[in-house]
Length: 408
Image: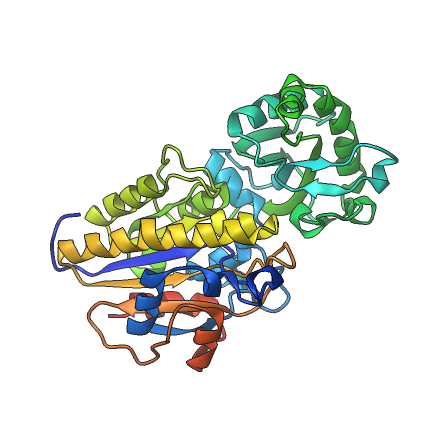
């Protein structure tokens, strides 16, 4: 970054970072158990509190939550998750297209279809290259009726239904881990279509060479296509029009990249960015600093804590949080200080993904708003859920945080 005197605005988002007390951590949350001195220093020198990012009546998904954190009121702007992912993938959407997320998942294989158990919503975090081969096989063999599945990243893909109807009743697979799938199969509009596709996907995927190799290597097979996340083409007011700022989103996740692109922000591809614990932290930070050279704003997103929460793995969640502290926030603040520019930095998750629940919740979450040029009014002892609650500052509508971040 070049030095100057223009204000810079940064959101550092650890997806699903907030949590509940975990018995295996002696009743501590992962944030409490983690060694995060830079997070703590930011909370001590900034304004810390709790914020609600899931409006009443909305599901606690990353789509709703990140839309909210980026300063868009979901009540006004939300049109579904999958169309944002379609934008990121580069899928052109017509006005009458309806989109759906397709997860490649792992289910048990013995017994009646309805009695199969959802083992893993991510098929062992299958690689994008492996997933692409499976998606092409599904496109060739499924009765898609002129529709098409587009390859996304890892287990996350997108079905576009042309001339479709909204009104499907579908369940995110990460909400039903270790449960039988029968009660959660698609209902509502086009339910027969989706159930037919899902059932037909199993024999296609079961004997595919990709899955045979994964099983031989001791990995989970992607043995079922699961559809959910219905939506229509997004229509966001541009971030520049709404807030007068230019910038970008740095993420490995199509949902976040699509959200940024739909808001008129850049969304660079970062080599080695995976959306898992072992992502390219340094590469993503470098991309964020590059954006800030010529722009005001960057939204720097990391998925690792959320994935660990879904897998019920407290050790990996702590590791993901500590890596954000040591490999992202610490060098980020050093680079900003060296550039000599004033900056505002918002540190937060989008929602909680508690280890004991293994899915998202709508609980208020901790945030810290640090202003390099101002003294704090709500400092905290450190960056944890408990310390955030102790300050007494609660923001009831998460989308209003963006104006607080951007206020000079």
